[in-house]
Length: 469
Ligand SMILES: [Zn+2]
Ligand SMILES: [Zn+2]
Image (cartoon, rainbow, N blue to C red; front, top):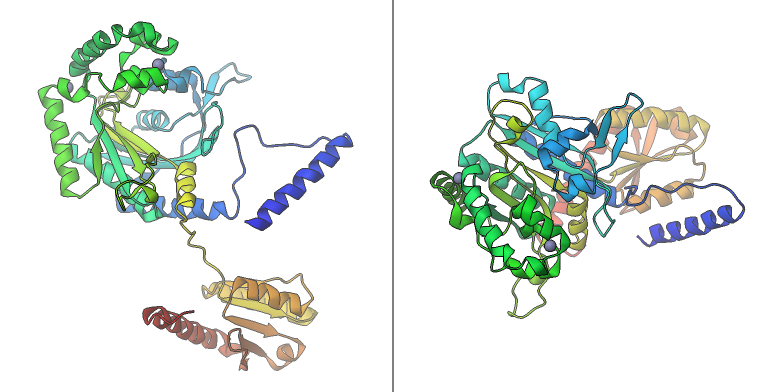
């Protein structure tokens, strides 16, 4: 980490010098960033978790374009949302099409489902994706204009168990990645029928406060009252705590559906909280809506009065039974969610989650030109056997090669010099004990595998008996 900071500082100085000399230099666009070591290792781990669990839950992978027709988002996400109104990157092509960089993934997947005839396949269809999303908003910590989302869409399923299964998958991804105290905040916002009476009650309540509402909310009162609950303005948020709750207005069907969802969650021992004002302000949601949160470790009650830290949200989703129809497709029930990957990595770093980095266990050291050629062949053999080896064929200094091997913490070094090439041998050096042994070339793999197996056993025994390392 320290090295990285130094490296960045040095570069900044160098760039400033270049600029003062009139040389043009380039920066990534505001709110966009490069991801590399050490952070990228956590992104890679998370991608592995997502891919493995997606497969285990029966999801197929889908890749959709980064650009879509702008109207796809206007129609599905809704015109009166910040996402569409203020945060979309819109561009006109030479062919005069109006396209938008996708701000989210569900609309594109729904478009793909209709366009590619997924409805004629056996239902339900489960699709997952991973990729960059774009939102033109003010960059803050952990919020980027280009950020990665992983999404899961369970299409053609109306049973409440689909809602519960979806939430379980989301929780398991968070836990498998290493996040602590993962929980679900959920609510039901009902169907188009019961939402009418709820909206009426909500409007009636907020109308009495309309003079004190922020200008956005004053407008929302007429355009889409549900979004009043999403406002981040302090005064508006204060009014929220006495606002009518959606659950009091659910019709019989919606009420039964939600009850079932909660029963399933209890059954699966998912940690959840009811949040009566969670509405997730996108047009396409109905019934179950949820958010995924991780409660920071320090907040775990120890003596009853420690600092309260806000739970960190890292994703959300819900049911969207009307979306396909809104996009001109067939009636298709659906439920899904998306995870903010950059956010999850940010939380993991705060919680000191370590990347499951795989370091090489062997290092190949060569001395001289003939040995270099031999090393090239040997490395190929090791890779074919699935043995991960470190090397630096460009280097001449043996000392430097040993230093690299030390830094990587490998247990064994394979040393090849002129003599070894001529005798068809290789030296195996135990880096811990310093003991070296000459092995015939054709026995190298076998000898190495045996040693690695023993080394692993040794390590397990040590940790098992608690011998300090
Ligand atoms: Zn209803
Ligand atoms: Zn407001």
